[in-house]
Image (cartoon, rainbow, N blue to C red; front, top):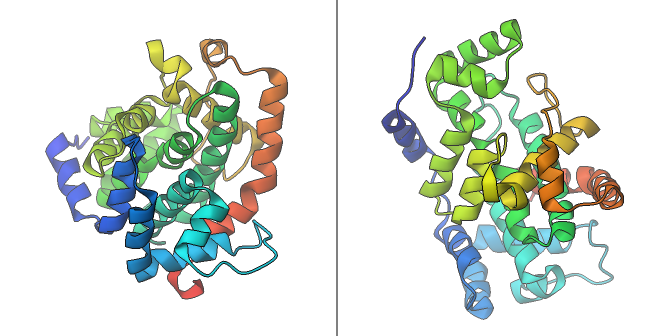
Length: 285
């Protein structure tokens, strides 16, 4: 077995295409209460690629607006700043991992599952009283460590999947046995490198095993959303099994069965449209 160390993982992350500076500005604004929305809108307007994405999002059939949105400021008004920021960051992160870069992982199916988890997490967050934009991004990125490992270390990750399939263990356990590190740890390292809020980093790092105060916060929420979308069979892949959902999570989040049903209905209703919205290639913009 070929164990990896943190230095190898960090080197792989440094080799990834860098996120645009304006996207890093948007990420840093997650933890600021005094966000200058006008200044960020001006910066987005100067970035041709990101402003095009923002306008495409606002003008999509998903929102069904009666007239066309022509400026970034109008797009932010239509979407709301928190939603616009989350969608813009999501679209850029997805684009940074292009099709064919996932090694043994089907990148399109990976992002479909991630988008489903993001939508479900956002719906559950509303009922749990947690920030919906943080929940959306944490849900989108919860398995990002898998892509880093599969694309950066394809031969070793093929061994992981072989152990996972042969011995019917969890994917995290198979990763630890073969690599000495799992996708939760790698995802946290990437979250740190991209300077996402600590709460989002923790959700990525603990989404299979939320503990303590995390049960009632983003880690517990993403743990629940991941299990729910697997059960709904939204964006599932051949390497995914429905994870065990810890009873303590529901108890801590105070989400009722009726609220869970509502979040499920919303997730299913929005799923295909959101995948089409966020997974378009550059050629389709």
